[in-house]
Length: 505
Image 1 (cartoon, rainbow, N blue to C red):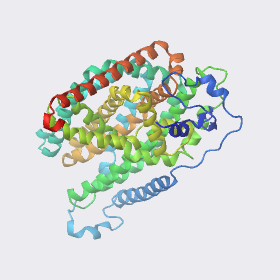
Image 2 (cartoon, rainbow, N blue to C red):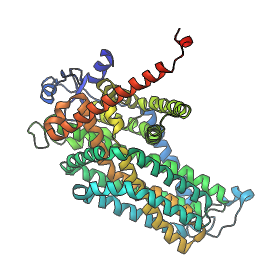
Image 3 (cartoon, helix red, strand yellow):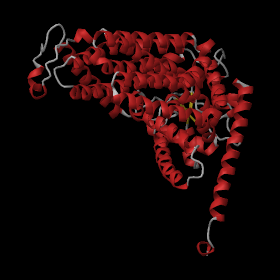
Image 4 (tube, rainbow, N blue to C red):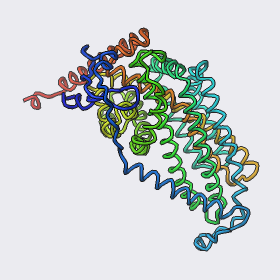
């Protein structure tokens, strides 16, 4: 990273109130990075007000909520207690299917998915301090089996598309777990320390619960409209297209709420580390309130923007990394995978979850935060450690398991009441469950990302917080950098040895 880029990243420092203040020296891993006390001593007494970022995307998200909310209300009300109350069937005469269903026939089925997802999310928060590690280990090992069992049930119900989809998912999950099995000990260490950090901040649990209630309120309207779609007098193809649109909308909405929590928790964790503990006398008053205010005002547009792309790019990157590590010496396949890998790495430079930490700390827009975070990791070598760590994937597995359980429960009840609508209700209920569980698990992922940012900016912050953990991180970083160096040497040597004398000349 150039000096100007370092200056851009470090031109402001976290003042403990979610707003930046000037004159922080550039961080690095060589040894001349400022300690937390030095950073605080260089802060100016005057506060720099934050500017609104990515306002366009905030407007897009709010407009999307209004339009989708209106469509859900209309579609749900159209068949509520009366068929075609709003005379929508006249627009679907060419694909009329004459379905006798009403909204209230399917709406109660979503109660099961929402209730199971809520119970699992609350259980996660309650058991976070005592059994979080065991729950995450269970998620890693049970997901493949669960997907395989569901695929068998789908084939048994003659749902061949879904059977193939879940079978492929089970196979990919199995291959991915095999590819990362040697990384799990370090991953679990990072997750355990992140849980320790979150448990020291009980107020962030309250934030997660509050946003869970907000999500449940939206899900009442969403499930009402989706139930109206399932009861609509159009063919299954039309229903599925509408469901896809509403599911994409729900995914974006859920991701925005999760990332609001992410920004709030990241700000709190960064604050604890830079001040040396939750009970430090230098801790500012009411930090949670100000972090929340910035997350839902000036930084809200950046959160909306990042939430639209980040999750899909992260998932694709994990899968490509898993395949790439197991290819071996197949040069043709390695070349193709390397092309995809570098393409995704370019996207990760501008869309990564670590951006939310810098959004919380410095109040930058999303793309600048993502780029600065990635350049910080690459310049300090911490990117090698992040590439080895699979904590995000493990947390995602737990979220998917929660969604599958919620979808299965809703699907079983639907099988009893409306056998021909099992997959529609089950798949949409699964998404509901994933989002609800994700609102609980995101607090741990936020702590993970904040720890890595702090370690890259100033390792002393992590050493002061947990010296044993700092030593293990430093040792693993040294090993990964050595591994990369030796691998690069082997590749260079192999290509040099295979070069013919003609090519050499």
